Image (cartoon, rainbow, N blue to C red; front, side, top):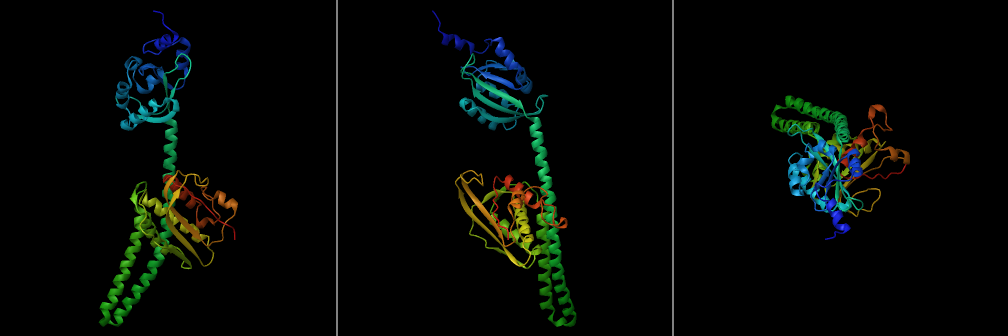
Amino acid sequence: MERNSKDLLADVMLPGMPLSPEITYLLESLPTGILIWSVKREVLYVNELWEQYFEFSSDDVVGLNEKELNKLILSIVAEPDYVRVVLTDFRSKPEKKQHGSCHILPIDSRTDAYLEFSIELVEQGQLKGCILEHYQNIDNRMRLMQENHDFQKRLIQSQKMEVVGILAAGAFHDMNNILSIVSGYTQMLHVNPSAGDKYLSKIDSSCQLMIQIIQQVMNFATARQTQFELREVEDIIDNSIELLGHCIPKRIILHWEKPAPLTAMYVDPTQIFQLILNLCLNAAQAIPDKGGIDINLVETEIMGTEQELQLEKGSYLQLDVCDTGCGMGEQTSANLFKPFFTKKLKENGKGLGLFVVNQIIENHDAAVYVSSEKG
């Protein structure tokens, strides 16, 4: 029986059938690992680089169906359930040319490696109808990302210690005032021992207040970072306001009314605490005389069309920190979140506070928007 060209083309797609020398040369010279699925969705070909990445030979995989290949690959990667779902989804829609990644574990003497992969449908030529998978080693990229992540963590921690110093100075000032009160009541107790219960009660309440102040500073100073948990953000703000009362000048009024319970969010409480402190301390330094800082927290819906925010559509918490300071010009606004940018004297800060605010916001997949006028 005479066979048509479609039958002949299908023959080329079957596992074990040789590719043309030109295509084989091209696939072997590519700087990526290559796996090709036949039109019958069996492994048709893998190049030498793919074999090096996964340490499975061509003989091990050619002719396998998807389930059989997955069994091999998923036995050597981190998060195998996730990788299986992603690979299955991408292979079912190869026309979308989607990208993903996987982490090969150092199992059975394999080399630990991070790979980025893309899957696409071949639409013309000898391999028309086949699915092509590219695998590229991204170890260097992952290393740089990790180094950047570690640097950001150290920077946030360094700036946190700077804030702890400011809080401690304010707390010591308040405790000095409390100690003066304790000293006064102690002297009155010597003069009038018969009123001992009254004076001892005052001394005890003053000591409890000092313990509370110390505990607040210690809780912030020793809290672990990068611990996301479901929390009411308004409670975190409540705690930060208590601490701010010790280090913001009395001429500046902090205004915060705790709202009715809002939707709980997955946040890092320590980072949110630090964010509130940084924003309010920065606002306070912008107020030369008497003034105020208003803090508000509301639920809001983002439509996904707000260009200045670049957030996906959904429900968010909107935190507003407004001050009555002197304002700032366009140049200052443009550089506000850059590291080491500051308009203050060196002894008043290193220019990291708002940079850290921006890093914390990015860590929470959020956005920041600044509005200010000079004067």
